[in-house]
Image 1 (cartoon, rainbow, N blue to C red):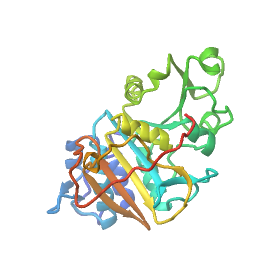
Image 2 (image 1 turned 180 degrees about the vertical axis):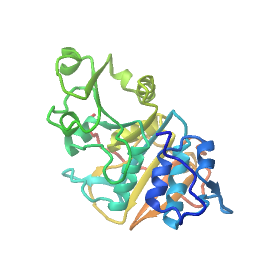
Image 3 (image 1 turned 45 degrees about the vertical axis):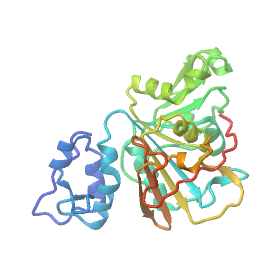
Image 4 (image 1 turned 135 degrees about the vertical axis):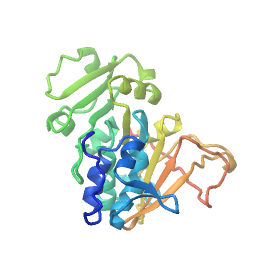
Length: 306
């Protein structure tokens, strides 16, 4: 992707959103950002030298992720106002709107790997590819300690992107060995025990395979586990103005007894159509220090069947 970013010609018209996104896909250093004509305005926002407002929105939202370096773990959840990512029967279609879907696909395009748990792979049969915007597909990583995800799922059959199937050694799939199933584009990684599935160890293992920029996409149990164990550098949560009442929870982890000990990381907010996007910087958390009156809450998660 190193040839994509180039300065926008002074004689050309304003850089539009599609052109801005194509340039962002190729930016991985401050030098490349400078060469592309990006700078900070008086409010500290990243903007282009000559661009449309839509192009400036993309720069401000994604440039910091582009410049985050080769080892960076981030997560995304879309949920209802009352904290659910799906109905009680698992229907997650259109919890958030089209703009959030595009945002999610942009995150995929900026990642080396996208991670989901077995529960999400079974319930949603996701493709985990980039379709709502331009950009490369990440490697799809399915965390499946018990080897229970059916072989007919799209991540194993569609051939749209490489898939890494991570199973436990004591599962039927793990005991059969990596060569038991020959599926084009699918690699099987067998881990020795449950401890090897700890988020920090998983991130390290993926980095060993050249997958340093990791998007943890779902579901709520998997994202919550990465968050609780300190394995996330950034968390995106999109909240839709809809009330489900009961269903599959989003975030849920053992919290503190006192509010002053709650996690209050630096936060940015943006609108995605009718939805609200919260971006939490988890590299410098400040427990007990309110940030601009914000009080991020965590729901009480049910088991997702990892």
